[in-house]
Length: 523
Image (tube, rainbow, N blue to C red):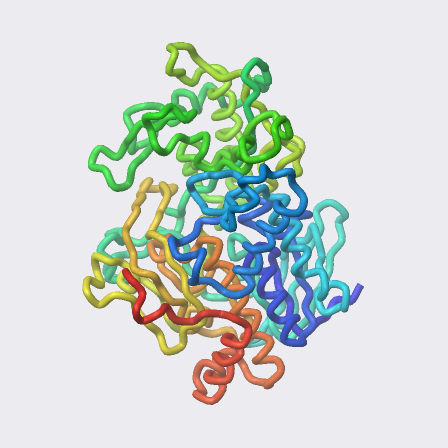
């Protein structure tokens, strides 16, 4: 196995996959590593359907993301027995979940992503190394020379050498190894000037993680799991922002003074947003009669947001405790749903709920990895803040536009409870652009972020962390690394020299990467 390539991409989530694909399309050779046996990160190994903006069906994403969405629908049209009336719907939503216009199975995303990469795996421009995580980096001044990755299952170590290195790991794991200046947690208001920033910085006040699980429901069945080890703790645990245990139908509401609201489980004709359909990935009613026993849904709810401690930048034992705690919280939620959850008829529990390990490719029905909302973030040439995106702050200035924009996106400033203060927010935003300066570390010259580890504050991360944006960041970073390699310049020189910047932006346009929102769009 070759241990060298033009570009090394560490992490096979959405950003990493798209960085590798973009760089390979540009003619460079890439080694892509992935810690699990599934590429795709948020969409696959973390089991989170795409969170998208309201214009996604028409515009506002890269050409490859549009291709991905079209391929997902084509996959269901071609391979599944959809009812005839559904086949006529060009905007098929396989799960009819209300969190996304395209709620689909993680395995469908996995197949499509592998298919998109397949030609470049076949011609040798992309080599994928599964099961490897970064453990060491060699640097020389402001340049990374190599990254060593380790396979926990086999004990194999690989030292990877290249001209450019991209960190597409979920937690920014390459940053500390390579000595990259970075921040974590919350910044101080005096530092960022953000209205919702904390009074003082706290690097360990990091957004919660969630260990997603898949389940279906057989009404007359009994699939109750063994009582989880930590169930007695979680069924009585009352968060700081609540007056009731976390395992209840009461959920935090960042926009409410009372901070809590009651949700329903199954659709009941009253609550327009029941949890069952929230992230449903298979709506059995749109397939041939009897093809599915029942719907399949993913559980990524407020009740299994784990905020008792971070999963990085803490001692290894503490990290393991928190990762295990996140799993135990999710299993406890499942057990509570099966045994104690109040029902509208006055009874308790839904024993017919069944974990679906096959849906997520695991033995227990939990995702391969927890959903990571917040990464280590580089100290960048330009740092995006709340003031760049908040509707409240920008007022009639509208969209913040950048001459060096490398992509676009839109989402709310959505922070889930943090680990120290349990801070949360859900702030309306304008559509945003992705400045190239946010992809450039203040010092290192050949390392780039390729995911949610770009230069944002914790609050701005709340909208820059979602699927289409991470995809765009990775794709633009891959194009940047390829351009820099082929022109024998650094990414900082691309940014700083007008003729290189113009040619790089032209490359993005050729690749179908939209870098600015339309001037006449309705906001």
